[in-house]
Image (cartoon, rainbow over all chains, first blue to last red; front, side, top):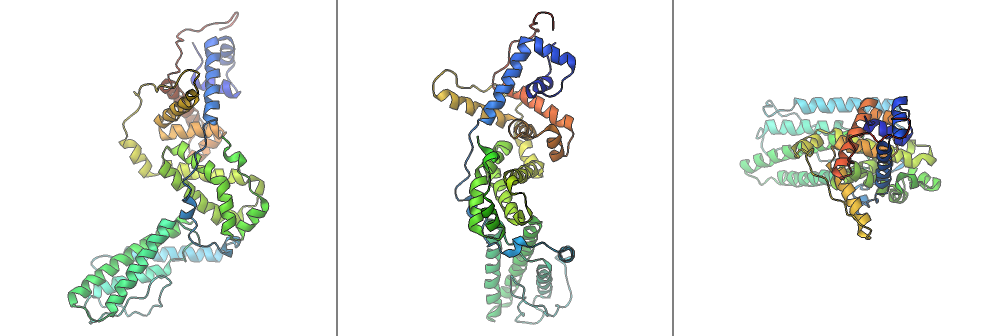
Length: 209
Length: 199
């Protein structure tokens, strides 16, 4: 009976073998030939050529300048703050639903660093549920920590694109020349954009942890 | 293949990179980009996934370099990050789903390596080996590559994969049995050929 592949690999690598297997391999030409074949295969694998990455791949990473943040250690208090922010953001996201009703919440928040605050609707109570959802999404967005200094270019570009679209929507909503139907459509679009933005920002931050 | 052993970084360059100098990071990337990408392609068998591994590794290097102090071990540190990124891909539900949709390859015929002494022989042999490795299951391919090429021990592989040493050993054995078949290197040895006074 010949040595098993596991035993032959052990013989190739010079690791411990049961005495009987060691004696067999030493005496059996076929098994010694197999050990030699395994050794040769390993050498062939090690000799496989390197593969160069696409030359522009670096550009997909270095989108934001790295600042002195890299040389700074995050204090425990900040970590706790981040954790609390995450928890708050998730609670707010989970509480949002399509059937939200009630009076619009007065928009008392500060503009976020990402998008402008929810614009005031042209007519009272035109879209209370959408307005409320929009404001909650903004609160969730504010609760998230700042964007990491280095991120995937694709993520950063998608976020920038969403922000641009939000600016356009807000500009149109502020124009005051909309039919109720147009206004409703724009508000729905705004909530969808905000929703995507919050989710993407959460992924981005979670990715960096 | 030079791999990560040649992936050394000048301490001055590392210091610049730690201060957030992106030009220095680009120089470091030039030293580890190819080994990381090669590792990704060999372990995952997909250039697109290898690109993701390289991006993720690069981002992690940039983010964590400030906390890394063993300049001489820079290559090993990057390799450890890259291996973990590859294994994370293997563990992902998406990867498992993609693999489950592929036809089972256990009955695949042996791949025909180029033969003869012509210059194309070595190239053909390399291609046959590449195709044979691609036929292995992702886990088996990862174990073979980590053990046989990157020099990880069974204990290290077991720790990385969250499995046992026996798992790593059996994956390696089964992978080699499969490679032997795929490369058409099976010997006609059904009986032992004893040497005098033994076997």
